[in-house]
Length: 269
Image (tube, rainbow, N blue to C red; front, top):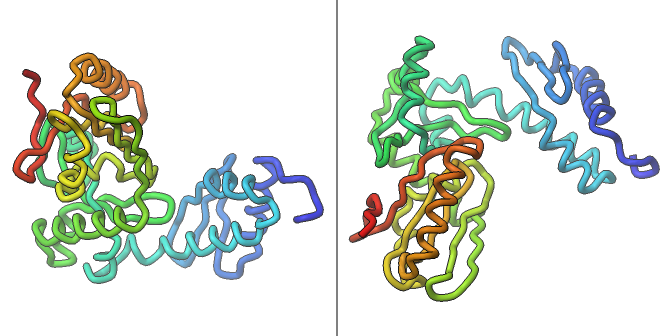
């Protein structure tokens, strides 16, 4: 592929589809745009090629590496969703903050109730099995099958989130004094959920005059800032309010702070 112009989006998808059809253990069921439906044994999988195409476009000469990664990703998905024991998935269990209205949707669809615990500001902590291209929500049936309690699940999830944050998380720090901002922008689906890591937040407090205020308008954004300058506080709070309803995966316009090592709702004076 190194001697040819980069493939277009549609040509890339068609090439991947053909390569998957040549795999002896994979049956390609269909392809619509950048989504390929495949079957491996008795398991039906949906493979979204969008992220892989973006990776390919950054380095077209590494097509084979991208394809190998895709193939590994497809196979990695198989055992996780059908795990019979908790030990099979414990290292992939993660927490995820969601609006409490999610429970209504689960109930209305007559799906097994999610494993969750209440949080603050009409949010709940749900638990997911982290997979290469998606997540699978953990429900009460999983807990029964694995014979594990919610408390143990919560402990594993927080430990995994803390470990991933230490290893991979990215934070942008800008400004000084009352203008200082710390923004989580790992884009791994857990940026807002890092609000559940009080030790991390406590380590940020000395960087801010006044109180440290935290906003999580959507799943992929967490911002920490100071309330020392009322105009800055008001401006950022207004943007958080807009983003919470306009951005994908909206969460809340409620602001938070940390007191005595605990996350609290921020109260305007």
